Amino acid sequence: MRVAVLGSTGSIGTSTLDVIAASAGRFEPWLLAARRSVATLLDQAHRFRPAWVVVGDPRAAADVGAGALPAGTRLAVGPEALDELVADPAVDRVVSAIVGAAGLRSTWAALEAGKTVALANKETLVTAGPLVTRLASRTGGAIVPVDSEHSAIHQALAAGAPDEVARLVLTASGGPFRGRPRESLATVTPEEALRHPTWSMGPKITIDSATMMNKALELVEARWLFGVPADKLAVLIHPQSIVHSLVEFIDGSVVAQLSPPDMRLPIQYALSYPRRIPGPARRLDFAQAFTLEFEPPDLDRFPALRLGHEAAGRGGTAGCVLNAANEEAVGRFLGGSLRFTDIADVCARVLDAHPFQADPGLDDVLRLDAWAREEVRAWN
Ligand code: NAD
Ligand code: MG
Image (cartoon, rainbow, N blue to C red; front, side, top):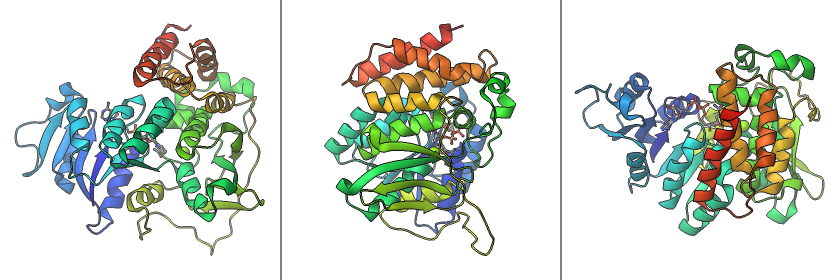
């Protein structure tokens, strides 16, 4: 199976290449794309010999010297080239692992071409959920989630029929500040927020885990991915990150998916689906005693979660505005011009102030994305 790996130099991208390397030729990378990590991309190209490497940023592409690529690998530059290549008939599956709203357009291009997308880029569904799901049903494109919670739900849903589902319960580790009082969170530094207790991930999603905005975005993601109303979505704190999510059925049975926190498993599931195959992901060791804990989330300490329930409930443009405001706010927090607790505050204000549309087009979504970013940049 020929795979296009978008965002191959990132955390999900490199784990995807681990899965591919361990697959004994079952998966083969046809295209590797990144924004500007040219040195890493060239290393990957020599190791995996894809047909194409795509560099998103034209200035970075200038660093690819003549003869830097292995024989048989070609270079393409910029987002238009990427859109065209993901739609190529040679591509069997697309791993969408670009970070942020920037991942929307290539995911869109893949679905438009009727591809099956292993979707890590949650921002695609958060920003344009109603449009993306409509597109997929029109073209026959499909989305298999990579996000561990949604992968778990996808797996657990196999235990019943859609009309037998009572609730989808997303687990959350609670991040590094789970036990901390709200007052002490205002002075949190980027270094502290970047230290996640259970998962090793890229910087943006690590900050989102600390604010719990990650779970907020995942509520919106789940709404579109599984087509369930927001009142059937719940969040449960589970510090060990072993139970990746649960489905409660109408008879009261709860079905969960368990495994150590290792993204290689949901990535591989999304590549091999509908089959399962052996792979490199860590396994639970039942010879060792271990404990699983659960507790309800504290919405006062983590107001971002409330925003997630709100955005999932409202649908329309709410997810797009929440996501864009948050991306910009996280950038300002990492740059030192916003306090940790301001992230959720500024997102709440921008979400409240935005001209809500229930059934937006793609142009409305892109315009509101830009508007929300501008609002956060101007906020002080
Ligand atoms: P990362 O920051 O580690 O990597 C991002 C990748 O995207 C890099 O390869 C970068 O070059 C590429 N990229 C960024 N902008 C680009 C552009 N404009 N054009 C082309 N390439 C571009 O991020 P990550 O942690 O791997 O996360 C990727 C996505 O997966 C995010 O949407 C995140 O929310 C989601 N996700 C990640 C994890 C995880 O464990 N890391 C878990 C669930 C979901
Ligand atoms: Mg997740």
